[in-house]
Image (cartoon, rainbow, N blue to C red):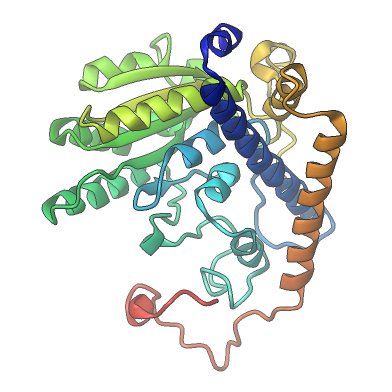
Length: 343
């Protein structure tokens, strides 16, 4: 499908597609490099709390982040590091949050992933991810009441979140209000260790879309080109007044639920199937096949990502956590609401 599309493109269109693909790949690569660093630090006892990786879900994640623009709203899930970076989150925010730095977006008050920059549209994650849909709905509805038009909100969830009551209530509300919501479901086949056939009886989660009166999309989560095309189209449709969009991506989590989990419950047949492909390696093979990059260029980009991650980690390791004797422990949403984000 991708090759036939490329053959019909003009020179300018082909160049634009190439640039978009390379940009997405480089964000994926940076996210994977940072995730690998977090995993290494966790195993070395340098990080406290859980470490949750997006390995295998970067293509879907980065496509969501890149489909949005300034002024939009993004509610990422726990494995959305690639999308966060593409949407504008600095690498240092992620590292500071894991290390508990007082200079981080959570001021050292949270263990790892519940970080964000709400004023810039990046919402801090609620671990019970079905609850994030209604948060995005609230932002979008508030903007409508203020007369702000042309913005889109993306809420990312996993397949397990579709089994919650908050999922039903929120998508139903978005459909009734015709909100410009794009709900991205990363169907990685397991809600932690519970396989999908114990979660829902429909053939696919996208089958739920017509029941709510929303548009449904299906995407191959291991194929970066497919993810970019589908997410860009879904966001454009929502922005153009098409109401909520539900995107189901089929993929496999290529790691445990967290670094504490060996994922021994994953069916080996899934790992060896097309669904178990590593989206980063698939993207690299595509770049080589299209002659959009050579192996030397890929190695150069990998070196740049490693250098950036190592420099950032070294910087944050020198930063202190909050001083328990001097810190004002009031809620960030009260006194500090009007304060600027620390530089």
